[in-house]
Length: 132
Image 1 (cartoon, rainbow, N blue to C red):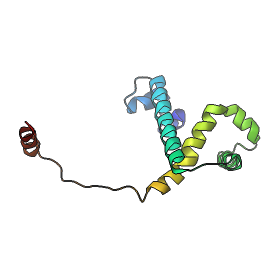
Image 2: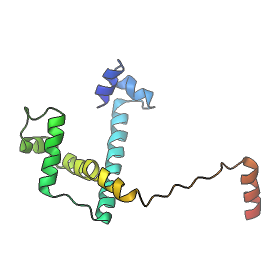
Image 3: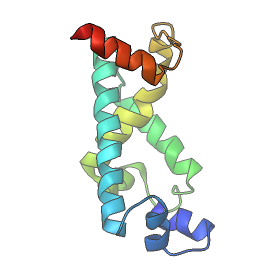
Image 4: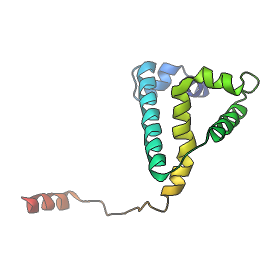
């Protein structure tokens, strides 16, 4: 993915990674993998708590759609695609990609956005003095 975006901007992967404050491509990749894993784990837990599940048939249908969208159906059968990507990728896909929309839909009526005025320095200092 990094190479794709770098190419879009006409730079190499290391230069593109540096735009985001990373010293190396490996550092960028490590952070990206951790970020994706964290999201997958979060959506897996939320889906579980909300009772959202996917049958094997639904997973296969979603993977087939993914393969079609990415023009991979001429390269792989569904089983070959699963094997090539491995269990970790499949779990991440299921737990993040497949759970994201249903979880967000289930939670949208539960989210409350609270707006507050920005605190001034004087107010913050007054609160600190009151607390003492």
